[in-house]
Length: 158
Image 1 (tube, helix red, strand yellow):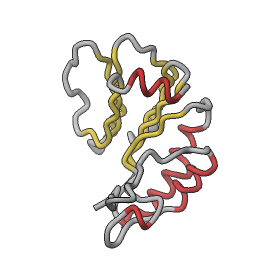
Image 2 (tube, helix red, strand yellow; image 1 turned 30 degrees about the vertical axis):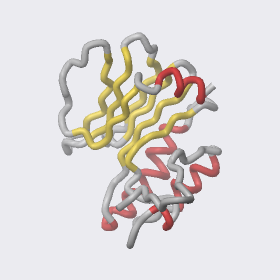
Image 3 (tube, helix red, strand yellow; image 1 turned 45 degrees about the horizontal axis):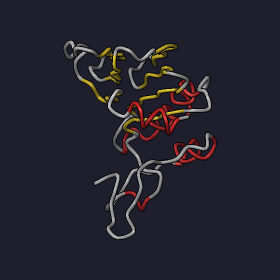
């Protein structure tokens, strides 16, 4: 079901992290769902008007927004960044992200800026690694769509 949804709606949904303006214009034919926090950063997604989006949930921090679209859970997150905010980021993964995942149906599309990597091989040099997202990937049987080429090394973080 998720594969068919992605194939048929690949250009119909746009996920945005770290938005800095609560209104970024009227996009003809599209509806914008925004979670904008007081510190001028937030998350959003944009969908084609004919897609039915329900059960919208927003984190008060602006760091996450979730909804359902045609039986698929859409989650978009923006985790705290920098090493100095490691405790805040872990709290976000353990509370905010888990809160958004609490009623997620079996089919789930989780997107965002996690500001960490699941494995040290995903980064060059030093990296911010977190066990919590890796555990969530395992617990929810998620698949990381970032694939590495065996012919050429690629990274999710530079």
